[in-house]
Length: 193
Image 1 (cartoon, helix red, strand yellow):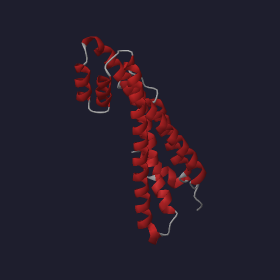
Image 2: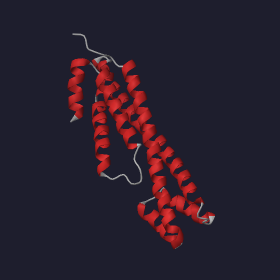
Image 3: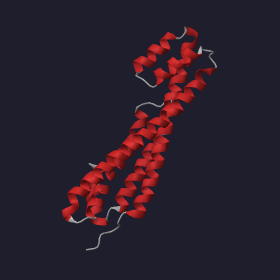
Image 4: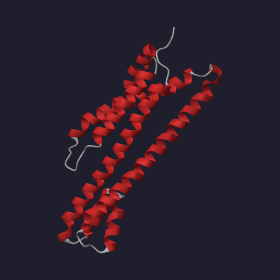
C-alpha cells in the first residue's frame, strides 16, 4: 500500500524526499526494535513494525524507478536487471552482516551469562551451539543441564538472544539512516515540466 502512495508522491515531487523519508522511517523502526528487552511483549512491537513497514513500503519501488528514469528507454531492460540484482545482492550482504553481528553479540552475551555457573566447558560449548539453532534444540540443551543451573542458563539464553537482536537492529538502523542521507544527496528532486 505504501509503495503506491510513495509512487504517486514521487510523481509529483520527485524521488528524493519519498525515498529519504522512507529510509528514515525504516531507520526509526529498526532503532525502536533495538530498544526491546527480554520482557517486551509482541503487542509492544506492533508500532515499531508498522513504522518499519511504512518505511520499507516507501523505499521499495522508488529507487528502482529513479534509476530507470535516468536511462534511455532502449536500455530500460538492462537497467532494471542491474537495479534488481544490486538490490538483492545488497540485501543479502546486509542480512549476512546483521546475522554475523547477532551471532557474535549473542554468543558473547551467553558465555558471559553462564560463566558464573561453573559448567564444564563442553556443556558451555553445547549450549552455545544450541543458541544458534532451533528453539527445540535450545530447550533440549537447557534441559540437559542440572536442575540448579537450568534457570540461570535459560535467563542467559533469553538475554543473549535479545542482546544479539538489539545489536543487529541497531546496525540496520544505522544503515537505513546513512541510506536516507545518501538519498537526499544523490536522488533527483522535483521534476521539471
